[in-house]
Length: 222
Image 1 (cartoon, rainbow, N blue to C red):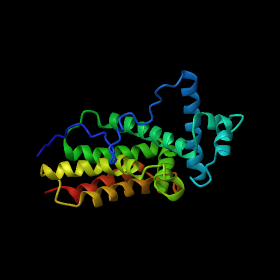
Image 2 (cartoon, rainbow, N blue to C red; image 1 turned 180 degrees about the vertical axis):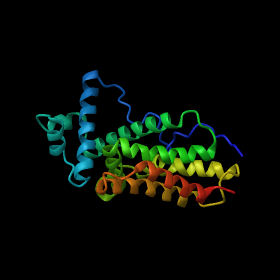
Image 3 (cartoon, helix red, strand yellow; image 1 turned 135 degrees about the vertical axis):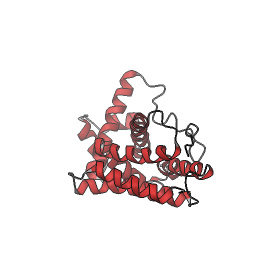
Image 4 (cartoon, one colour; image 1 turned 120 degrees about the vertical axis):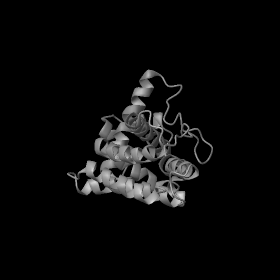
């Protein structure tokens, strides 16, 4: 049975609109370029050193800037910078996945295609993928309360959960707990990112196919 899905909901779990995530409204071209430069350096430092060791000093060194004041001018603090970095990574991942999925509407193929595209994103954007895992693992902690765990959940788990709910409603997927299954999917893809750091020659095409087969068997109704 082929069942199509409506456009994905772009609202976060806290009601925030994620469709403009990362947008630089109101910036001059020079400010926008500088912010992008700083965010790209932040992605690199997060991927190479981890969240705990990411500092303005490391970011400035990576970006080739003269002073940490350059970062402070464009971002109110580390939380502000990390949130902008999170938005940038999500924007890039969304564009990549959307291109891979094309006009696909079938719920089953859409879900499996989403997982395959995210594994492919890990292969082509290892820094962004690693930085995303680092940010997500610190969302909502005492030191980083301004990084909303609700937004992180919405863009990383909530989308998969909504696809599972839609598929279950239309009889495409079995009657499983969508929260549990969506979280298992997210952790499986994150596991690809972590394993790739230890095994740079990992065959991600094969890995993606195996994950697709695994979760297809786990959720399909027949």
